[in-house]
Length: 383
Ligand SMILES: [Mg+2]
Picture (spheres, rainbow, N blue to C red):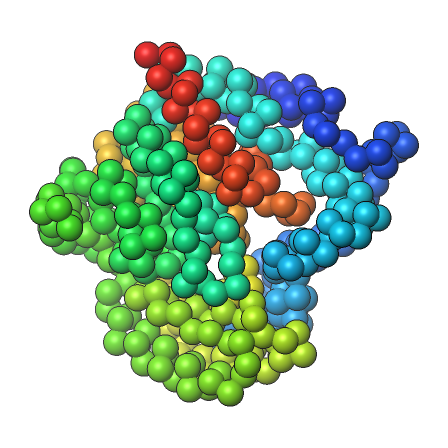
């Protein structure tokens, strides 16, 4: 299945005239080039890995990555205030959307393709269902978004796959109708099905908050003591850096630098990597204004999607269309899995052009909510 072929050219499926183009667009007949891809891409995977455990954040490129993380809300507002910058940004975004059409304006093409297939929805949390905020503890989901997620979950199998701990993301979402995978998929609470093990790790039978039987899958459980230790050590190492904040995500640890002065980014990185020297079984990755420490295991959000599809009995089925919506680099693993298996597709949530393995895009959580509402309406009207 080639979605882009099946759905027609992205340009035709999502014709530019439907977009509100800034006046600057009208004066150009040829696309303006994007900024250096290095600003937005994880180019590290193309470089020869350095020895040791720092697999994705390398000394030569870490500062670029830390600087180029998606802009904070303050910076987006500043862009809007500056008309010239805003026009330039819009032009780049419109050009980018030729390759990553809006899932809203391509909605009919998506549902035409879905036809009678059973949809399975996978949703990231931060930046997808909730806005990115300065304090991660305040990434609250709106009641309207919660209602939209509850509605789609009543119509399609729906799972949240987050980098946060499973308990924490449940506290934010508060919906029992969903399946949850926390710690980047390293802590999955799924249905009791035929899946009893994966990658040689056994599922644990448990009960959820409502007493319903569930399967717990925790492929990194042996790393828990080490993760606890590194959480403490990292906390001590950055405690004197203004704005640096730790987050315990059970099977991984986050060091948020969203509120750190740019001049101190280097200090954050140096402190974190100094601690990491003692933990060759852990690796450091980079997300949206966050450095993340996690076990070196062959498991990620993409594997979690495969595991959940199998648990739900949807893995072997030709008439299933999995859709994954996410905004972060860690979501690319899931986009890749769906792309490689030609079964479904990813939707990247981004307000800036980014290279991605997703097929479609949505600009922000507000558009995600609109997409979920349209999916529910479509499903209800077609049955
Ligand atoms: Mg996210």
